[in-house]
Amino acid sequence: MPQSSPLLLRLLACSTTAAFQAGKIIKDIMAKGELGIVEKGSDKNDLQTEADRSAQRCIVASLSKFFPDVTIIGEEGPDNNVGDVPLEWIVKDMDKGVLAGSCPTEFNGVKAEDVVVWVDPLDGTSEYTQGLLDHVTVLIGLAVKGRAVGGVIHQPYYNYKINPETEGRTLWGLVGLGVGGFTPSSPCSDKFIVTTTRSHADVTVLKTLETLKADEVIRVGGAGHKVLLLLEGKAHAYVFASKGCKRWDTCAPEGVLRALGGVLTDIHGKEYDYSRDVSYPNAQGVFATLKQVNHAELIAKIPRELKDRFPY
Image 1 (cartoon, one colour):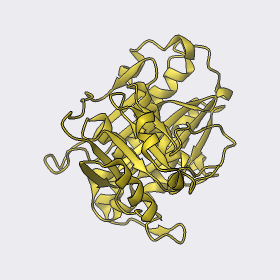
Image 2 (cartoon, helix red, strand yellow):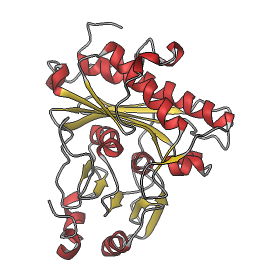
Image 3 (cartoon, one colour):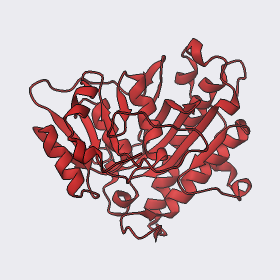
Image 4 (cartoon, helix red, strand yellow):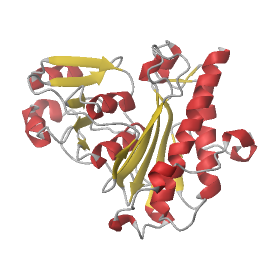
């Protein structure tokens, strides 16, 4: 790997190829039909499969090999057997499209100790087990000094209903550099569309949606998938008034969204901290919007009694 490029640009480029490789592993495991499903907690929708475990080992081993001093936090917890990862899972190159960009000046001097990588190896596990494959994403988020500044969203099954042999697509973004792997689209101007959870709706989620008076609500699985709807102009806002998300769910989507001028905060309008020592849950909910949307104005519409359900 070329060492002449700034660390953050190389890390993003390596994350892009690692996410693609993880996507291949996810598809291989699905094709074999041996998902190895286990429940991680009391929530029947909080599942882990062999694909989650293997994809994370691929990503962590790949990034650790080239960036041993960078902190990596994965959804499936620490793995003491990274050294046993099959060699064919470990990426050997970086994405040339990322490296072709000019690293923003503010990130040229970023050091390994400034960076935390947040990994969700398979976002949308419940949907994966149910065959809703277009909901599935691989998420690798890059945070510098606690702030999400870049990320990778890989869709292993992109367009699979039309092209069963699809290799998927990989989207990436870095604040100050822009995005790659897709063409952003603007949302429609004649109605207001919100995307939210498919399987974790409760009274608070529903009441919050009611206050926003959306013309249409799109319910899908996975934080990555929801932010993709924003990036593609299919929704104006992603609203989740619940404590269900974690930092690895939102770091990558926030990084790509911010690279396009969008915003992702909690339900109060405050940005999340992605430092290495923070608590993992996004306990104050998730509220994301495109740059064409007045984020603060929408946040202000949520009644205080609903916001008070998410104290600091």
